[in-house]
Image 1 (cartoon, rainbow, N blue to C red):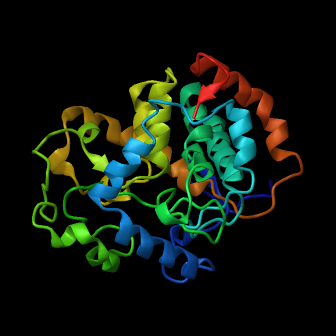
Image 2 (cartoon, rainbow, N blue to C red):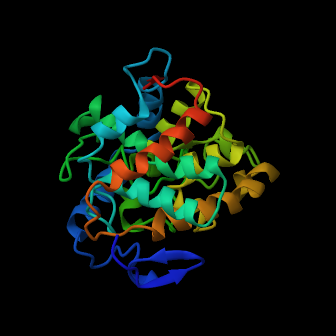
Length: 291
């Protein structure tokens, strides 16, 4: 990779920190704006329940190794991301390598490697459910910042002007601060706008991944910026959630600040793969996994 410009919280970054998560005038602004307009419009509690049923892992859709899954994602570009237009595979490796470089545990390196792999759902989805795998297709149920479905969408979401487009916000059952939930019910018991985070969280459970709870939290909550960065949903949290929050924040600095849109070296992924193949074998009990 080319030389980076500066360091932030120990993470080498390729551009100024304030230029990340630019939802105002980035080169990808129109694509990203359309993504969040559609996501906020269609991601109702009813839709989330539909997707949880579709991807329940009761009957696996396909068996393949993580390497084979990576091959499927080689050309996938995230339409919700204003920071990078390279294939998502490169971003996952950048995240894992940033974590590895600072000496974090092997399980956290693995989380960095696989955290976005849930976007592989495009293999079984289509435009009608926001799961198109092309850079300009509908991806509003694959990527993007999430929120808790079944209660009021907070104003700290990205592009909050689109919150009013969500039909649930006109339903008195769902448009209050608590909505369908109880105080201190625990984040493990709420439902999030559906995307790659939830899919990968359920995937890891179904395939008996042995990373610790902190790793599972990083996977499930890393896109919920209203929670980990915006301060929302504190009324749902238990002490366990408070304990996990610093881990999610530590992970997210790598997820965000390792993004580098400059061309990578030839054979970048191939050269790194032997190391990460060893981590996969350490934390997954079998090579061929249920997707």
